[in-house]
Image (cartoon, rainbow, N blue to C red):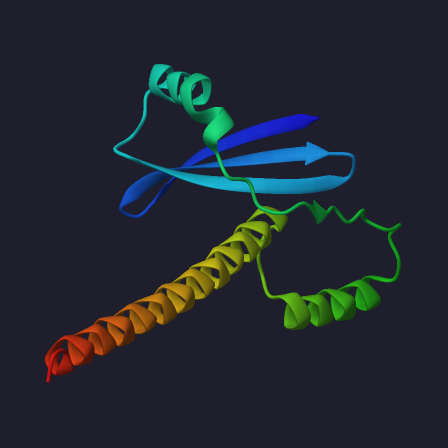
Length: 135
Protein backbone atom coordinates (compact mmCIF):
# COMPACT_ATOMS: atom_id res chain seq x y z
CA UNK A 1 0.00 0.00 0.00
CA UNK A 2 1.36 3.39 -0.98
CA UNK A 3 0.07 6.60 0.56
CA UNK A 4 0.63 10.21 -0.37
CA UNK A 5 -0.35 13.58 1.15
CA UNK A 6 -0.45 16.77 -0.90
CA UNK A 7 -0.97 20.09 0.88
CA UNK A 8 -1.85 23.13 -1.26
CA UNK A 9 -3.52 26.51 -1.04
CA UNK A 10 -7.07 26.45 -2.40
CA UNK A 11 -8.37 30.00 -1.94
CA UNK A 12 -9.07 30.88 0.95
CA UNK A 13 -7.91 27.76 2.88
CA UNK A 14 -5.05 25.30 2.95
CA UNK A 15 -6.18 21.84 1.89
CA UNK A 16 -4.63 18.41 2.21
CA UNK A 17 -5.44 15.53 -0.14
CA UNK A 18 -4.62 12.04 1.10
CA UNK A 19 -4.20 9.48 -1.70
CA UNK A 20 -4.06 5.77 -0.98
CA UNK A 21 -2.88 3.34 -3.71
CA UNK A 22 -3.53 -0.35 -3.12
CA UNK A 23 -3.48 -3.20 -5.64
CA UNK A 24 -4.09 -0.95 -8.65
CA UNK A 25 -6.87 0.97 -6.87
CA UNK A 26 -6.94 4.60 -5.72
CA UNK A 27 -8.98 6.13 -2.90
CA UNK A 28 -8.73 9.73 -1.69
CA UNK A 29 -9.77 11.99 1.17
CA UNK A 30 -9.78 15.78 1.35
CA UNK A 31 -9.04 17.68 4.58
CA UNK A 32 -9.32 21.45 5.05
CA UNK A 33 -6.69 22.86 7.40
CA UNK A 34 -7.65 26.55 7.38
CA UNK A 35 -4.49 28.55 8.09
CA UNK A 36 -1.20 27.34 6.64
CA UNK A 37 -0.23 24.26 8.66
CA UNK A 38 3.32 23.76 9.86
CA UNK A 39 5.03 20.41 9.39
CA UNK A 40 4.53 19.53 13.05
CA UNK A 41 0.79 20.30 12.82
CA UNK A 42 0.41 18.11 9.72
CA UNK A 43 2.34 15.30 11.39
CA UNK A 44 0.24 15.61 14.56
CA UNK A 45 -2.94 15.57 12.45
CA UNK A 46 -1.82 12.40 10.69
CA UNK A 47 -0.98 10.68 13.97
CA UNK A 48 -4.18 11.76 15.70
CA UNK A 49 -6.85 11.71 13.01
CA UNK A 50 -5.72 9.42 10.18
CA UNK A 51 -7.88 6.49 11.31
CA UNK A 52 -10.99 8.71 11.35
CA UNK A 53 -10.59 9.91 7.74
CA UNK A 54 -13.33 8.90 5.32
CA UNK A 55 -11.75 7.80 2.07
CA UNK A 56 -13.68 7.62 -1.20
CA UNK A 57 -14.55 4.37 -2.90
CA UNK A 58 -11.65 2.69 -4.64
CA UNK A 59 -11.19 3.63 -8.29
CA UNK A 60 -9.17 1.71 -10.87
CA UNK A 61 -5.93 3.32 -11.94
CA UNK A 62 -5.56 3.29 -15.63
CA UNK A 63 -2.18 2.49 -17.13
CA UNK A 64 -0.73 4.39 -20.10
CA UNK A 65 -0.47 2.59 -23.41
CA UNK A 66 2.52 2.58 -25.71
CA UNK A 67 2.99 5.74 -27.77
CA UNK A 68 1.34 5.88 -31.18
CA UNK A 69 0.79 8.44 -33.93
CA UNK A 70 0.85 12.00 -32.44
CA UNK A 71 -2.29 13.06 -34.33
CA UNK A 72 -4.13 9.97 -33.09
CA UNK A 73 -2.98 10.72 -29.53
CA UNK A 74 -4.30 14.26 -29.86
CA UNK A 75 -7.65 12.99 -31.19
CA UNK A 76 -7.92 10.43 -28.40
CA UNK A 77 -7.01 13.04 -25.77
CA UNK A 78 -9.74 15.35 -27.07
CA UNK A 79 -12.28 12.51 -26.96
CA UNK A 80 -11.32 11.55 -23.41
CA UNK A 81 -11.57 15.15 -22.20
CA UNK A 82 -15.02 15.46 -23.77
CA UNK A 83 -16.13 12.23 -22.11
CA UNK A 84 -14.67 12.60 -18.62
CA UNK A 85 -13.66 16.25 -18.31
CA UNK A 86 -10.34 17.66 -17.23
CA UNK A 87 -8.97 16.61 -13.85
CA UNK A 88 -6.67 14.25 -12.12
CA UNK A 89 -7.70 10.83 -10.88
CA UNK A 90 -7.71 12.17 -7.34
CA UNK A 91 -10.02 15.02 -8.29
CA UNK A 92 -12.42 12.62 -10.00
CA UNK A 93 -12.34 10.30 -6.98
CA UNK A 94 -13.06 13.27 -4.67
CA UNK A 95 -15.95 14.28 -6.93
CA UNK A 96 -17.34 10.75 -6.72
CA UNK A 97 -17.07 10.88 -2.92
CA UNK A 98 -18.91 14.23 -2.84
CA UNK A 99 -21.69 12.77 -5.00
CA UNK A 100 -21.93 9.73 -2.74
CA UNK A 101 -22.17 11.94 0.37
CA UNK A 102 -24.81 14.05 -1.37
CA UNK A 103 -26.91 10.95 -2.07
CA UNK A 104 -26.56 9.78 1.53
CA UNK A 105 -27.68 13.21 2.80
CA UNK A 106 -30.69 13.14 0.47
CA UNK A 107 -31.76 9.73 1.77
CA UNK A 108 -31.35 10.78 5.42
CA UNK A 109 -33.23 14.04 4.80
CA UNK A 110 -36.09 12.17 3.10
CA UNK A 111 -36.34 9.69 5.99
CA UNK A 112 -36.27 12.53 8.53
CA UNK A 113 -39.00 14.37 6.63
CA UNK A 114 -41.23 11.28 6.58
CA UNK A 115 -40.63 10.65 10.28
CA UNK A 116 -41.53 14.29 11.11
CA UNK A 117 -44.65 14.07 8.97
CA UNK A 118 -45.72 10.86 10.73
CA UNK A 119 -45.04 12.38 14.15
CA UNK A 120 -47.12 15.47 13.32
CA UNK A 121 -49.95 13.24 12.10
CA UNK A 122 -49.91 11.26 15.35
CA UNK A 123 -49.94 14.48 17.40
CA UNK A 124 -52.92 15.75 15.40
CA UNK A 125 -54.78 12.47 15.93
CA UNK A 126 -54.06 12.60 19.67
CA UNK A 127 -55.43 16.16 19.88
CA UNK A 128 -58.60 15.06 18.08
CA UNK A 129 -59.09 12.23 20.57
CA UNK A 130 -58.58 14.55 23.52
CA UNK A 131 -61.13 17.04 22.17
CA UNK A 132 -63.90 14.45 21.85
CA UNK A 133 -63.19 12.46 25.00
CA UNK A 134 -66.15 12.29 27.39
CA UNK A 135 -68.68 14.01 25.13
